[in-house]
Image 1 (cartoon, rainbow, N blue to C red):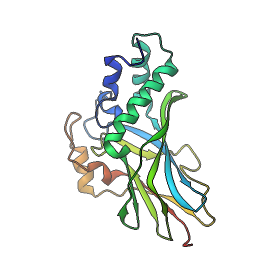
Image 2: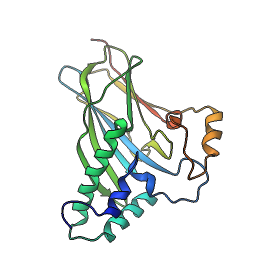
Image 3: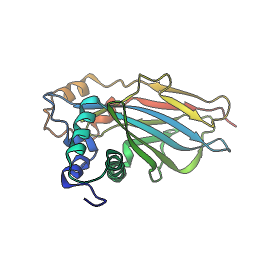
Image 4: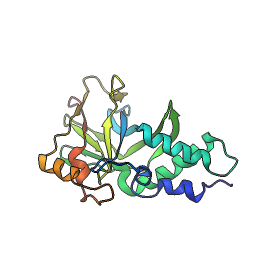
Length: 223
């Protein structure tokens, strides 16, 4: 096989998020899988926020299913090479959905640039996809909070901050006095019931995922 994955492998990555076609779980309600993730916020030397670096760790069932699919595919590539090609497919597909990343500053949406520096690897038995999403323009916080959410709009997959690390949000090159926190989701009981009632093959109403998404927030003193 040349530098492309087989049709079987490519099917793994089709759709809004790479996981959607490989979750044949018996569950009767959304979500059907999860991603544990971490965020590193990058600042430049002028104290502007310039990028969000993310690491997504897929749940054990999906990780096993996907790596078995990659191992069975025809071709001479090593697993590392196949993971690299998979990462390219993931990056391309995420570009169609704003990288599932929604950023706001002082109540206004913040535009993102093009995903870069992505890596796909196995962390123990779990598949991890890491990448950097730059902001379209460097952003001065000026005392107002920057917030973000990462979610699958259909809530097929749930995104959760990684509880296995001491700091799921870290700040790189941040000016003195900046602080970050995770804000827990607090969905309306009606939305919880709506998600619970969805069959595994049902289409969720658009925007359902945002009601269940944890938020990240960083504040820095006005300069």
